[in-house]
Amino acid sequence: MRSLLVTGGSRGIGAATARRAAAAGWAVCLTYRSDQAAAAAVVAAIERDGGRAAAVRADVAVEADVVAAVEAAATLGPLGAVVANAGIVGEKTRVDELTVDRVQRMLTTNVTGTIVTCREAVRRLSTAHGGPGGAIVLISSAAARLGSPGEYVDYAASKAAVDTLGLGLAKEVAAEGVRVTVVRPGIIDTELHASGGQPDRVARLGPGLPTGRAGTADEVAAAVVWLVSDEASYVTGSVLDVAGAR
Ligand code: NAP
Image (tube, rainbow, N blue to C red; front, top):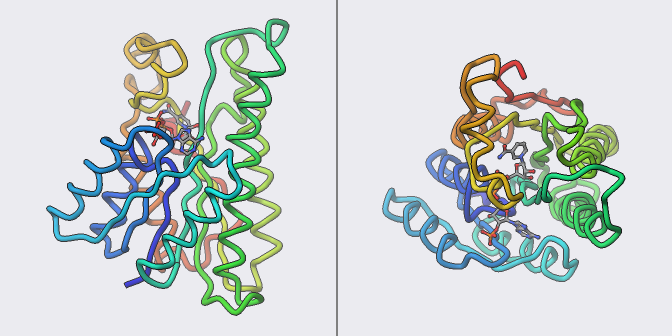
């Protein structure tokens, strides 16, 4: 059974991806930063459904944690896929009010964390490193093309960096058996919005979206699990919006 690592798999899109990936036959290693109970609940749900999973505490902003998480995933089975999902938003603010501390936290988690996750994934997966090949999915955001004015332009910019990382890395490793794709969710009903100080964001903005509602974590997970599957064998260097026409 091949293993799949999903960073930030204790809640939201990462947890839904972990559950769908396990149902699709992957041995799933999910990471969390602080919510050990939530991560354990995802593992228990997967095991109840007959799947295999393990949870590892790993802050993607800490290089050694990412290295250890990829190693842990490889002990569950030969590593076949990595979903770089962990990410944070900040409180609603304007650029002229941003602090360097906040910007650094945002970039270290969303950009450096994702780049280091990719580095470790390529070292394990690439045929140039003796690996079997595999798939990497980066979770970006529709914010990368919308810019998030008046909300969190720093977050949007960090996700634009993720888009470009995906495009460049896809070309770099295309001949080494590794596919790299980017998923850009729109407004998805998770706890992310509350963590950014806007617990009512989904209820407030959902009805005004083109679809009249926010998306669910499971709707994003379905796209991710297809992208890591062999069904998507010629899909690489692509950016897929799962954003309900937003
Ligand atoms: P969420 O519900 O807030 O869950 C975030 C997950 O990431 C949790 O498992 C959390 O772990 C983990 N995490 C946070 N910081 C971490 C760090 N430094 N190291 C390791 N793990 C960390 O968020 P979500 O909505 O599912 O978002 C997942 C991804 O989708 C993010 O990259 C986000 O930017 C992107 N996205 C979300 C939306 C949306 O509307 N929800 C839209 C576009 C893009 P703990 O449980 O331990 O805190």
